[in-house]
Image (cartoon, rainbow, N blue to C red; front, side):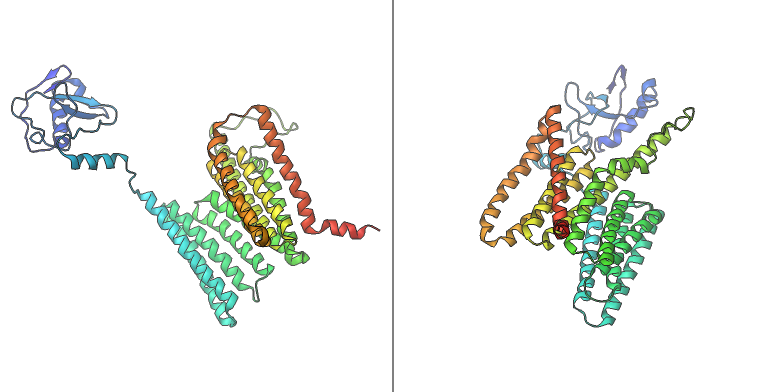
Length: 449
């Protein structure tokens, strides 16, 4: 056995795998050479002189090594080279598949279980909502309300136990989302009567409160639950406007979409302010010590979390408002134009984001708003549905271009400024459409003598 400048004669069993033999060989060499007394965190391999490393899962006899053979021990600081299979095609196929396969991990199992739980709970919530819509007996509605409230409380307690007791953030977040959803369903069922803005108001308020309680109770999923709480708060304010002022539904939806877009533009400044990173005023004393590096890093991460939550909340609320406006506005094409411009504005906003969650939320919500506009346009213009459907390949080509070609292009400062101006023009075009949907032009025409 040769290892660097050390040579020893060893008697090794031929039927034991090399994985078991190598640690003992290293221990023996440690008595002869100081390098092997405290072996570093490297992997050792055996090889015949001038040949590739031997497969450590096989024994010496399986490699055809007999008495008197000369072996070399060497360290491998990098990943082991793939063994060479010249005599066993089955092992070669298995090793190749294992090398390139992506194994199913524990985290993947947790995510799959969480998604399945959310999906099944969503089906249960839909059944409870169906009970509200079709049941004429108040006892059935009351029982459904009790079931939803009990499920929400149980899920909230389970979320606290999952993260506080078992340190499982995935389960805690999934259970918190379930609790928020069931609280919203219970709030909607608690208001008697048919579907109305009052039901939406109580449902959104219950969801916002439950999300805030889940943030402080479970201590996990702060970014997601904050986004849910903010989006539910926007929905509650819109429903409150509908209930208090008896405003038309399309006007409330358009106003909520425009306000959400305006808040989306100011989300970076809001996140900086909420995280405590605002610049000091000139009136403040200049001799105050600068914050510690760790405190500054914590504030930076807090600002990034706030930004992700605010972007997600305002993007979702603006997309929902635009979609509702497209469905409820008369004439329909006015609502279609409003929803389409809102979707374009959300997609354009994704250009200036860097975090993957923020970009994903903006792309999904913008695409959803455009999809609703596309479907409403097709249903409102049945005679021209063929031409509208023919525009789908064009939209698909634009999406492929934005996804595969545009990221590979380096835009000049002038081109970037031009894109920013286009985004401003889209935002400027949304405001007049919202005023039209809200009926401000009709009101102004009536006030004119």
